[in-house]
Length: 229
Image (cartoon, rainbow, N blue to C red; front, side, top):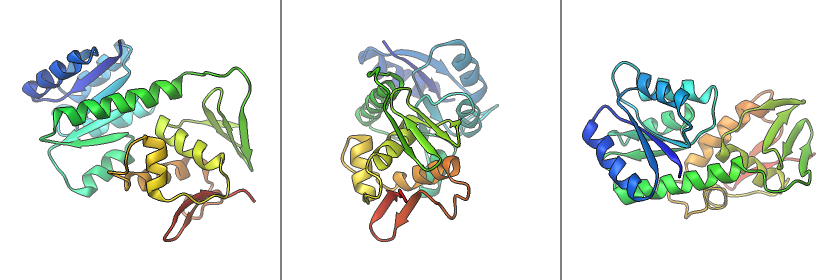
């Protein structure tokens, strides 16, 4: 049984989400502002968070940024807004997915299941044989699921790790945004634009100059590649 933290100041929403998640055999913890979310997260073993953005005391954006300082747990943002900039903001501060209110409960459950599956796959080391990809100063260890730059470990989310693994294990091969989404998210490319946001976050972690990347390069009009010189 996986533990899901649901945070929204509208109690009828948290109660409704709890019903759907409980029917899927998830254990649900509920909070009603960002402060409560942080307290529950520190106290319980949480495997995924569903976080509203607009909340009193401490909003979901601030709570998400604080959680990201210490954990790569999947976070699905909820918001009544549907503008692209709000989605980009959520992804930039560390969210893995984004659902707009009012939402289809079945879609939310599907996103929860998908993110849990990716996170647990990322967190579990299956092979005991060392499996390391090294390109320049970037090293990816697929046994420990760690990425290091010049010997210093950098924190990556499960999605960021999977994107890096895909591109580094196919160095110099160009992948379209749609191909990256389908291979990493393991679903049709309904929201492929999120790939660009994740690429930007990866560059900030591995590149000396993210605006002039040495490794993770765009091929204009086609997609992205990890360049092996």
